Length: 217
Length: 217
Image (cartoon, rainbow over all chains, first blue to last red; front, side):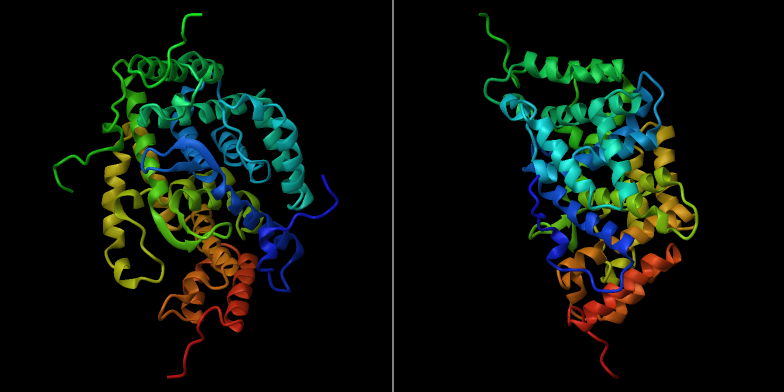
């Protein structure tokens, strides 16, 4: 990270004097994260003809956790899982979105996102920054049942959107139905029934020509 | 409600045969709520030159609950409060957004939204539909500490966005700084410190000419 401080959104209209310091830091962070609404993903919305942004996506995952938690193969704490999905993409404010089927951009993704997490969570009071960082690390490491389920939602949601779009990013040049299956298989680490449903959508999409079948070599 | 069934988003690309019925209902609901991303609010984003939509707004409130919960005057369950904000605007998918400073549209708002809740939550398996409806009723009735805090976030978030926009909807024709104070005072029912900060922003905004001072009669 450079020593130079990044200019923050809150610098554009500084808060007035006289606010409590801790609250000022919290509000500065909460204004900064408004930028999540401007990070575009590849997925097309089901309800409109445009791409989805990270804030909408994060909200959708939280609704999915709330409705689909019963399908987790292991017991999960729903509130904790919701926390994970709400903040899992925050680092993209500084690191940008890395498309699932872009393996080149994936190479330094971890490093870029970790630096972004350092910088973003440092805006918060120290105790809260540490807590958020721990939640983000938990999501990334995918070792707890909650993190596994959160990750499964992160893969299942665009699968639903691609189904609705009759292809969507499944049509990315060079991507085959087998690539889709490989990237989505992580759903099965959290829920056998949801992965069965997900595979059903991928298989049927392939059969209808919405994704490309692997060619014989 | 009319007897005719509303056409659903999931009808556009029906799910394949062979999905479990309960899961199919859950996925139908989860696709339907994609429409929350298309319900526009009056508030301008801080991070881009466009209006905010309900899904982004709901995500932002959830982040605010997570960061600002310590300012609640009464103890609150953070996970439960997050659930309330995540679904509080879902009814607007069918009922539309009612601007805070539009008192005419406010007249039949409750009736329209209640009918929308009946219809939307009926898409879910009965037990889940009842649970969501109870959460929405809890938010609307504002009797629990969690609902009071959720409502406070719902009023504080656009206040932050208006501050960042140096006016925003405070500049709505006919609206005065006193109107803003009156509509925002509900923040004080959940948190004295957040309402003190909110008032500070409104007062300073008025002093800078970002809202209109009441004229002498």
